[in-house]
Amino acid sequence: MPSERSIIKFKRRGFTLVELALVVAIIAILTVAVLKGQNMVFDSRVAATISIANDLAAASHSFKDRFHYYPGDLPNPGNSIPNLPPACVGLSTATANAGDGQINLGVESQCVLEELFQLGMIKADPDLTNPPFHTLQNPFTSGTVRVVAAAAVAANYPAAWPTTTANIIEFQNLPCEAVLAIDTKLDDGLLNSGKAMASVATCQIGTGVLIPFFAISLN
View 1 (cartoon, rainbow, N blue to C red):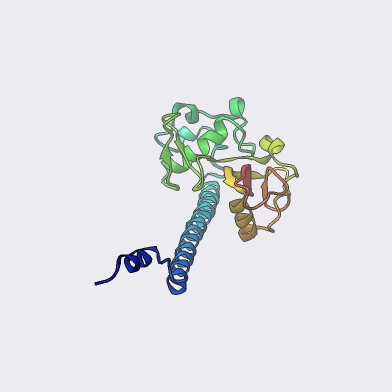
View 2 (cartoon, rainbow, N blue to C red):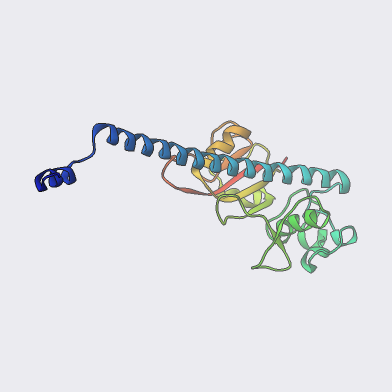
């Protein structure tokens, strides 16, 4: 029979080096798995954001080929597109600058998604805060997506767009890391030049900063 002293000694025995090494190895494996999973989620959201931009661009250009105007800039779209909200039906050159090549801030920009959605050119979600309109959410945050004339929102950007009559696809509240990744894939990797620009000239990875505006030129 073991003595009381040997039992106490056994109970007080700590982890061996082998056991500690095994624990450390397991922690390292779990850490790598978590980081890999986070990277996969991030990469999928970057890809989804780029897909939204590409889909909007392709749909807008197809719309222009069909109607000779960009969505939102088409005069009297209710004559050609069914089921539009009343605010979008009667846009005219006299009341909303329709037909001038610029997707003006306000009702024109708001009607872009509606015209594309009602024609089946894009998918969009009901805007619960502003029915019967629809909305697109960016894959990272609650920030929305819109198409608008660059000149109408020039104050959002520290540098001028290459084309003064550019219309842009604008994302709100993307993380710094996402903006840098998207700009690198689609443009020059610089936030204050080229066809993709942000509302800041630079940002620091790892700070959790959200960039208020990031946009890609449509034309």
